[in-house]
Image 1 (tube, rainbow, N blue to C red):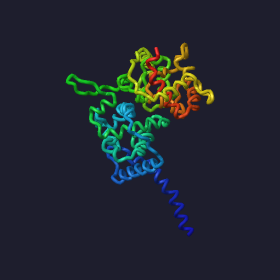
Image 2: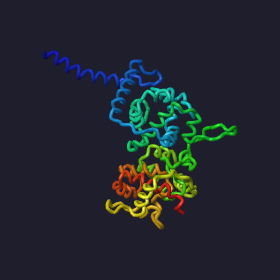
Image 3: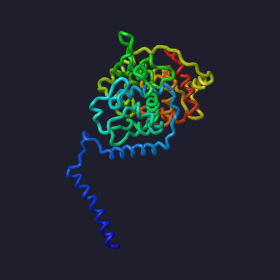
Image 4: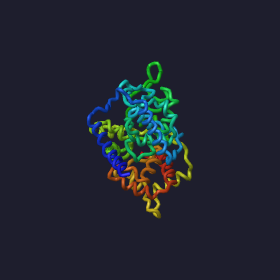
Length: 354
């Protein structure tokens, strides 16, 4: 028995040392040009699928059939994902195809994953593949929007993709042709409806817009989509963007009818607050004559966007400026039904704001 234990101890000590010597020698190739052995490739893929499957067991997917989820995710996909995975607007380069492993064609592999599994992959990425995690781990709502988009991607033709991503342009012959992604790809007024989760920028104050852009650039206001978009811009261009959108006139538009009682409840909160719960009136800060220009204009904003931002403040997720703590405090005292009421009231108030 003593001999067997000595042999075991030798193995425990010697084998790791031998492994380190082999690694130190440099004889183990890490070159991607030769690929993996078939057994290695199978094992790594097997481990990955098992890991994602197990991690997704506790994930409950929300409804993903809302068309408003698609545009922001599609724009982010074209700028951040298509360079590796390709898209209906651009193919994968030979350089990308030479990666190990090569990024898959998502039209083929997306149907093999569940919604929860796609969520895990998009949010956390995949080690040893070059697949990055979502830029911020605090915005599950953005990750689910990307999952909703990926679900639709396999059935999208080029025209549908260009339309939803904001890349579409009309050529001389009337055909749809790709345009580069810009701020207007998402924020153009003609693309925004009352159900859009993308904000209207036209007519916001310059200080508010500049504070928001800098907060995204400095990762103080979490958004995987906006952090990537603003991260491509030079610092000196941020004041120019803020000035451009602040000077744009916000056109009036038809607003989806909302329940009169819901609007009245929103009006009550906006004008009087709810003293019993220490909720101040919205107008005590927002759109107040002579008030702080760093506070955003809410009237006429998309109802779905207002809802989402209130939920983010309520959860303590949204930040960005030296004033964000004020809204976090207020939103923590709001109820779920308050979000819908305030969204309905402010979304329909555009015509009464000078």
